Image 1 (cartoon, rainbow, N blue to C red):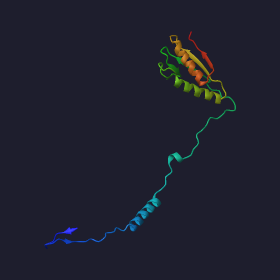
Image 2 (cartoon, rainbow, N blue to C red; image 1 turned 120 degrees about the horizontal axis):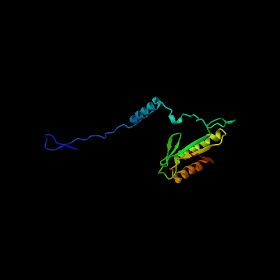
Image 3 (spheres, one colour; image 1 turned 90 degrees about the vertical axis):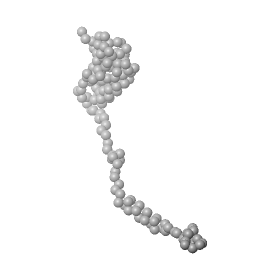
Image 4 (cartoon, one colour; image 1 turned 180 degrees about the vertical axis):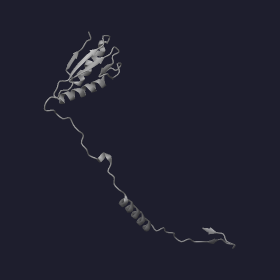
Amino acid sequence: MRLRGSGKKGKRLRIGNLELPIAPMIDIVFLLLFYFMVSATIQKQEADISFSLPGRIQQDEPIDMPDEQVVQILANGQALVNDYPYDSPEAPRYRQLETMLNRFREASESNQVEARITLAPDDKTAHEMVVKVMDACSHAGIESVTFAFAN
């Protein structure tokens, strides 16, 4: 590197080899790493907490429970159980009703009673809608299906 001075010729200034001592910096980095590792607390995540969910209990003797569900089918094809609507009448298959009927069958089997379904279609209900509800019963594994008609 040249420096221009007051003289006629430029003077050269030599800077010796600058060395940055790395060993002390590595020591400091390891000390900081060790400090943070020791001072950190390990928290148990919620996913690691073990617990057991209750299962189904098999009954020794039958329990008196409503072993029959009435499925009303309105004129527009809407299926109702306990005044609760299941699925849309436009759906090609009643999957929500099927799921509910499957749970009803499992509960009846646990209590050692037969699951029974009574279909109560409206007078103006299309046969296609009645068949869709009967298909849902069949897919749920319910074999005892009867009809109720108003007088």
